[in-house]
Image (tube, rainbow over all chains, first blue to last red; front, side, top):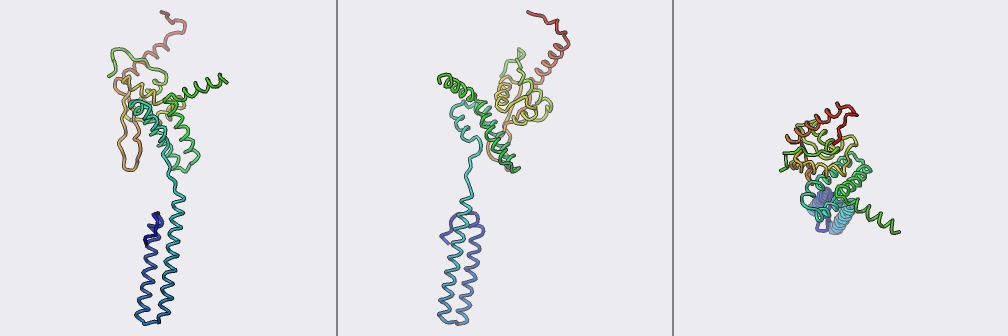
Length: 153
Length: 110
């Protein structure tokens, strides 16, 4: 079973099933051997085993692929702005202003996701990021630059 | 350590925060909780800066919440009013009440 890719369903469902089928087919083979059947029947049985194993292998690969395709790695809200603020701000500002703002935003975001309100979670994420920017005073900087650009134009 | 020989100035937003925190003096509150209890008088963008300023003045104190096994990530910060903050707030309330008692025309200019 070295072909098994890593995946939740493959590990939890595919491997026990494949081992189960393998066990059944091998037991059938042993029983047939014990009963003294013909070689042609044994060869047919071998083919059946190979076919079944191939089907299981393909099924497991497919299911693992589907699981891997559905899963997404998502960064928590405020991860980027937090790292930027940690680089730009003093430790005191980061600890007192940025960190609690991000922590509260994440809590609110998780609350929204727990209620399956995806739109609200997105809104919390946007509003939280803006509030962190506002707390840092960066929005003022952006506004000054924007006004300067507008006056030049 | 803040200077305690003079009464510190307390702005409108700072006063709102003290008001909310002193509604339940024994319990600690999160920044978000304070914003929710303020009834749109405070905004998320400014509350943390104001809380930081209040902490500098020694009117409130904060700590990070203990990490819990069922939660991960950045710990939230809890705020509560100090004894000094309580005294300053009660003094400010008295000054406000006295100011309300004065008639409007009796304002003494320096």
